[in-house]
Image (cartoon, rainbow, N blue to C red):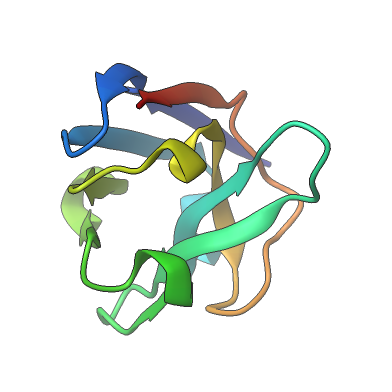
Length: 118
């Protein structure tokens, strides 16, 4: 079993920045990729950014150049630095651990709300 705990999020004006953090614990030896997904009201959950233990990354086109994912393997923690935020980035952001660069595992965090006001 893997436990996933997120922190960060909140309310920010358009053009602002936020940083999300996520730490995995438990059977972490099985974890390769970690990453962030988001779900806006009335929409399906979508991939935002993922990163492998070796540092390979995958980003949604909509966030390329604005968001940066990074990882501290020693702390089993992944970060998402979000800059130049737009109202359309408003969503609940979920951390996932143990999936692939292009697909999640069954291990999710509880989600953290990000709201970008115009």
